[in-house]
Image 1 (spheres, rainbow over the protein chains, first blue to last red):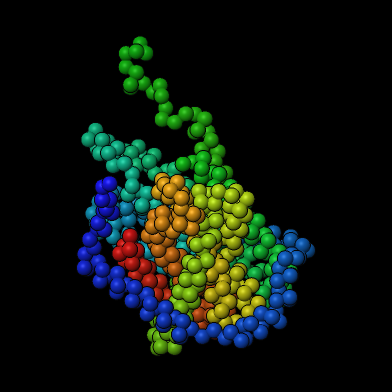
Image 2 (image 1 turned 45 degrees about the horizontal axis):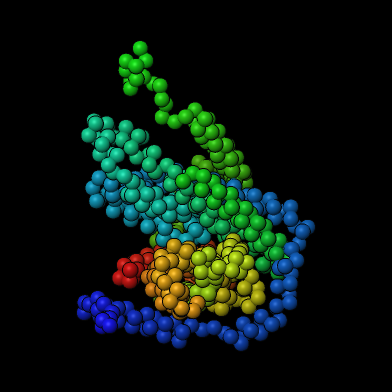
Length: 266
Length: 269
């Protein structure tokens, strides 16, 4: 019988080993810091939970059907906000993504600037943008539209630019070699390659925006969030149950529809 | 005559007529809904869009210059926010393992169990983080704890879905080989599934951590602890320079954490 041996483990360089150890130590330190300094008032939390449980949980599961009309109208407004916002974002993201994609505008500088703009926009949470726009255009649904539009532009721009970077450049080169000008290359070489995925991501973003716009009302930017804040400050948990129910239904339906549409497009 | 120069003749349009009509109809429907949404959402706006632009300028002026004197006062809240995100991500990362395995089609061969977990996760993901926070604040009172719970539940939904998708895309051959040579379920998972999924798992956990940082920043708006609480107070007092400082701090923190998490991901993958 032959002496069977396992293949030797690949040698790992000293640098990599040290780096792994340092990362591990930092993570451990982070955890020690977190768990020793966070102050959770367990006693009060548990006490509150015991006294509140029967007041909150059963009511959440018996939605207040009388509020259905009002909740439905607010939910519809939420859908409008998300739709207008994500469509605006889809349009705004296109030029930015062409700017951020390395293989389009030529030059690393332009693409780096584009990427910076996009990640700066992404760093603002939607709700913070909503606060700024509520102060600017007043507490109404349009502030929500603007917040969604700007917030989604960052994410969509990044996705779009990655799609552009992954296109087949041979088509573009072939057209260049045949003497096509920039506009022709754009319309016949680039756009047909990116359109399905662009649409797919824009529709996906609409799904995300439905969720995002349902909470914008908390800072006064319209939609169902306004009702969430009222219901929670009035401790009207039956109404909260209704709101939750309508959010779950609408989000599920839109997720389902968008998944089907996206499967058809790509 | 037709054979003479078929290339130059417009015999074949780029797209078939049916597609063209379909696309045109869809385009107009989308445009219609958009116009309707814009009209609906601007209904109760005072002054219209032209007024808004001028208004925006005066408002932005109010926010400047930010009052950096409060930096030391908000430091603790910002740290609390980060800690909330760390704890929530950790708990979610642990809880997600059984859920992700159960909702992966190629590992859970018992169909009803797969459908139950899938549906549960789908339902979980429809609830926005702030709604969870509102409910938990109602249940546990104002503080960090409801915030952590809300973040945990919220990120559990996302993480379990992403990881179950990773599990579904693994190479099944090692698993079958392991099973054929007599490994039990846990041996198969530990020796052939875990090594394939581990790098993706870490990367996705980091990604969810980034999402959690963003989410935990705003949870305080409904009383769930962290920097959002302070921001909400300052906005209620119309103290815009202070609010601007907080917004700048949030912005910087998110950028720094994203940078670190990107570097970590590159090092690990």
